[in-house]
Each structure stands twice: as C-alpha cells, then as structure tokens.
Length: 293
Image: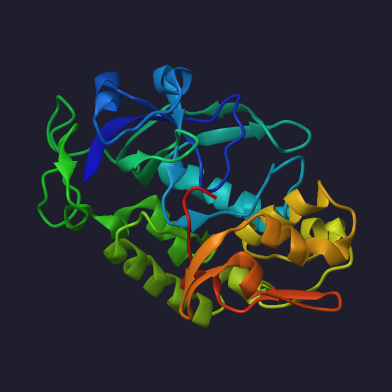
C-alpha cells in the first residue's frame, strides 16, 4: 500500500539532485503511518523529509566528494524542479548547493515506506490530491479520488503523471530497481526505459555502462557516463584502494546481491573486466538490487 501525503517541496539551502528532494507534509501526523518504519527519531521528527524518488537514479552530483559528468546530472535536477514548479534557482559557486530559490511549491507524494536512510520512498507529483484543498477538488487520473492521508494500492496511483515517470520517459535518468518494489511497478518503468533506450534519447545516446576504458578515477567523473550504482561502487573502491586491478576482489569482499535475467548473482559476477576495459554484462533496466546495499 501507498500513503498519499500532500505538502510542499523545498530546495533552498539543500543539495538536491534528480532523484531526491526535501518535502514537508501539511499534516505531519501522517508520518506516523505504520508503513513508515523509522530507524532514527531525529530524521522522523525533521520537518522537511528527504525523499527518495522511486525507480529512478540520477547522475551523482555529490557522492563521497565525487560527482559524475555534470550535464545530465543538472538536467535531471533542473527538469525535476521545473516539473514541480520551483523557479528562480541559484547555486553556489561549486554548483552543489541551492542558495536561493522560489520553493515551497505545492504537491503530493505516494509513499510505500522509508529506506535504510529513513528517506520516504516516493512517487512524486506536482499537483494536489483531490479533495485536499479547501477550494475544491483537483482531479488527477481516470476519475480516481486521491485524498490526503489515503492508503492506496499501486493500481490506484496515476503513475504516468508522476515526475518519476516523466524523467524516465525523457531519458535523463537511469533505472534502479529494488527487490522491495512491486513487480507491476518494475514492469511499467522497465518498459519505458527500454523504449527510451532504444530511441537513444538523452543520456542513452552516450551511456557507457556496457563497456568503457577505465584509466583512473577521473575517467568516471569527467569522461564517461555510467549507471550511478556502478559509479558509486567504483568511487567507494577508489576511496579505499589505490590499486585499480583490485576492483573485482573489492566487490567480492562487499557482496551486492542482484537479481538478473540469469538468476540471483552478486555484482562481482556481472562486472566484466578485460585489461582496463570495464562494463556490466546486463543492461541497467534488467537488474533488481537488494535495498540494503
């Protein structure tokens, strides 16, 4: 089930990216829903929760002091803000923090729970749920009545109207699926990613996840665009080991369970390394990850 929560989106003073943004609920009591298994009291009590935008993964803008090539990272962030209705955005000199913005844009989320970092896992919408505003209803999707605080099955949520879906459809984010996601949700997003990839839209025109020459850490920060999940594993490796030939062993020592078309495997089993050529055996949309990794 998903909990419908109306509220406002916020970016001023924060470091959002294309798959994460702060959200303040109009009715904070809704965070007490039993679907939210909070692990940290401070994060639960925070007025503005950091969301994890479900099913998509934008290029990293600040992961362990590293970032991916910035063009598509900023494209995903700025398109998300445009869809939400946040305008007049100004960044710091490093383009990592938003120092000024006309934020507080109204919207709503449908959340299935929180992840291991207490981020509500959310399908994000710029419109109000029907019946949530005193001035009347705001219809969204096939006559479905979406009321603040309602608990809905996935089929009752207008997924194609979500920001998640639109960013996937425009080819400016990668897929990242987890085993806790409903199969119907994975199937829907996998379909749109396959179509977008086939058309070589957006980042898919220059995606190098299947194979690239890795010379050093600068390769993945400045030169090639790869699936963010693989980028994060490489950055963590480089921050712990300077020997580029030891990456496979590093992955074995840090198991990362994945469901693939070939069955259950670990990331170390699907990374192909031939000299300095690295890549994944499977396409990003074919993979389903363990949410605890």
